[in-house]
Image 1 (tube, rainbow, N blue to C red):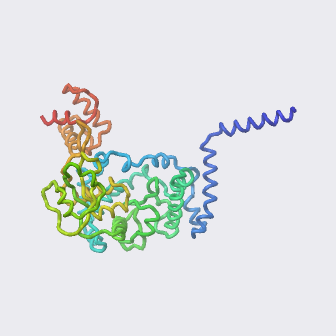
Image 2 (cartoon, one colour):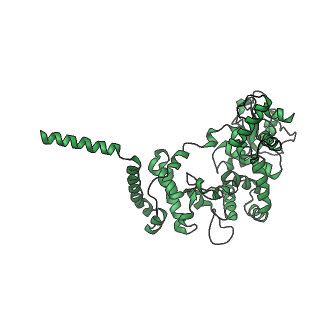
Image 3 (tube, helix red, strand yellow):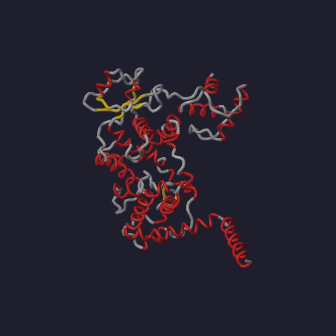
Length: 403
């Protein structure tokens, strides 16, 4: 009886020790076991032990930031106008025009070879990596094998995707296109200037600069050509637009998602807000109202669908199309989104920051983002004007500064 009691006590102590042991240490051992066991899968895919060891050298624990970021995807959760504000604005347009000039010869060659609009490529480059600026911010990058192993190990919903991408990433290392230490990307493994996941890289990657490597991390020509190759192989229609902004009469919401010719849409009362007619022809378009019946409407063409092969989000494809048009000087969106009362659109946010800077209240960058510096300036101005000092940008404040 005493021995049984001692055994029971020992089992309780052991259980308590396991329960109270630091969870990360236990998870680390399990993660390392997962990496060791996954090699059999990699080997069956043709990955050598040398490549595998190089890929996971120094990797001892999952990447906790990957799991945090996996729960937040702004293109599927953010209001359409907020999403577009942060991606289609004077800052991204000006940088796009700068890059259009800087890489003019490269873009011309790519456009001629793939028959893909250069301004769409610039817009994708902006959306994916802020024209490469993200690649210069190490804290925003993740080691791709570690990130994908983390998802495969910890995220049941993404396990199959992550395992498939991990095998592809290992093939990239084995091919010698990039050193293991340079194989960095997003939390989900998207890589380089134009953010290709590993499987897409293997299908579409192009050596455009002729150095013998398909290097979308360091070579802008390779990255832009790779993006053009994806669009071309998925049916890009040269010389045609992604879509048209339209003014829709009441009752058109019932046609959302329908496909008709541009002539048929015109006969139903859809017109372009700039007064220009639709081009003649049999091209078909789909009606979309991203903000509902009270917001702007768009007729989306085939090239819009092709952009969605890059990213399946409607918000993403609309942002790419609008940014491309603005960089090219083809005009900006004319209608307003149904924003909450007293809020500003992106151009008004830029104007507010510009006016605060001219008055000496703000000394930060005019970028449309309202962080602590902008909010402190707003609070100071609000207090001086007798407006409730909440530190938030508003139409009331902008109108007061205009006066």
